[in-house]
Length: 588
Ligand code: LR7
Ligand code: MN
Figure 1: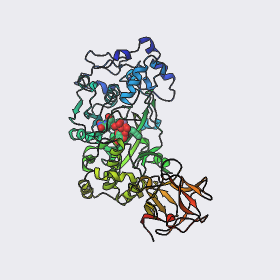
Figure 2: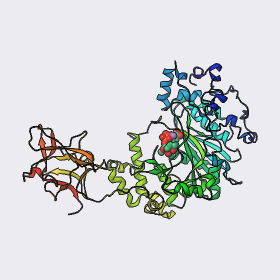
Figure 3: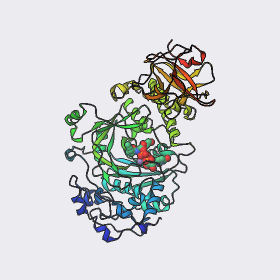
Figure 4: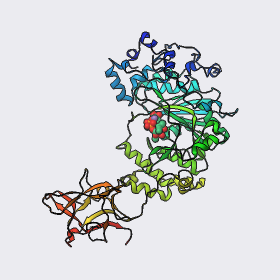
């Protein structure tokens, strides 16, 4: 195990973190000190080696522990408070190594109790929420890859401590072929005391999507609950999720995701009034509630639970009826490592007869990190993996809307050949009889902007006298460069409003810039937001010049040196060197 002893703090410093102190500083929330809200759950936990009673204030560290990380309520971070910076003093090297390893402050995480108390961040109305008497049971599936020991164990403890045991069928940990030493025997030993925790070791790296599928395959609970491996379930997190499924098995509820600060491990409540959206780069995004939704929410017959209908989910944390999950075909097993599976399942849920919700009465904290502590297999980068997954998503679920995705992200096309075959998934969608993506947009997410894809011409813009193509280059200037045929910087759109737009930067257009030295009357071209007044609208016919509608000047080349060619607005000269051809003309 790592140098845990160094992480230990003296009892004198622990005292300053006494719960009473913490509570004084948190007037807004109740802290579930000693899990007072849950004592009945722990006494009914039969047949376990888990000999800590949650009602006790301190837990003894057992000899067989893989770690001496604290489990008592007096360790730093109790009540969800941030760990103070002075605790890092003199430990700079370990702190740095922790960041390097886990991409969050692992040193601080190790100081925080594995069973710390948290502020109850639920809106007060939740305390009156009506929950079904007879709730379905759940299997909790947590996949991990190179996770820090303390965050992984804190995740597990928070599930055990804050879930009614009769509803928690099992916790399935899926080790996605981690190589870290601490995740081997030490982990086995630690979790062996919890009979409800199962550990599935994958012999080869599968990525989070297939790892979840493997966990779901062996799950026995009526409901599957997926969680990331660096989370903390808060008081009463599970019941509202199961309640929604108990009422309607096609409802897929997500908890509200509070933030666990990646540096201080302070527990920060989420903004209540958000739901999941997405953009045409297939990226998940938080968006505000549509007008009227807030009122509706409070009048809803189920208003006690304050549910928010959500077009998409963030991905990591949700519950779903197990059979419904498989009826939907689970996840697409062709998805690699990380990314876009959250949109796949979101679209599928809505389009194939279910609905997606966020429950502010169910709270789970998540450590948001800026980088990944694991590699991306054989793929060159996280981005290529993401693109390949997006392509599968677009091909199977987006119908004619996939054109928007491809035109706004033209570089994605390079990965189409690497995205694998999707015919099985298309067939599955057909068999399920799912609705169209247009239905989804119209009924579930009408607030998304649908860009106007109509255009007069597209592609590279070739000069007719020289072997040069218009090239957006990097920085301010726009040039002419030998035609490389790879799109990218040389790919443009002549829009319906006659502006020339850079294809991969939706909303950036060619505009008039500064005068060129030694070239009388020439104005260099530059790049501006398409709405800027400097943006040029052109008169152009196939293979002819581009003429600025305002000044009557033409798009011409300025040879600065034999190698460096910029483009500029110049007096028209009726010569082929000012004639250009777009690769594709879409209207005559
Ligand atoms: O190869 C891998 N194998 C794994 O088992 C890669 C990851 N994993 C595990 C990993 O250890 C973690 O437990 O899978 C889980 C998710 O990976 P993260 O934590 O690196 O992902 P993330 O939190 O950065 O990303 C979010 O988007 C992902 C898209 O694929 C997943 O859907 C994550 O579950 C998701 N996380 C959340 O939704 C939490 C809230 C974030 C927000 C908003
Ligand atoms: Mn995560």
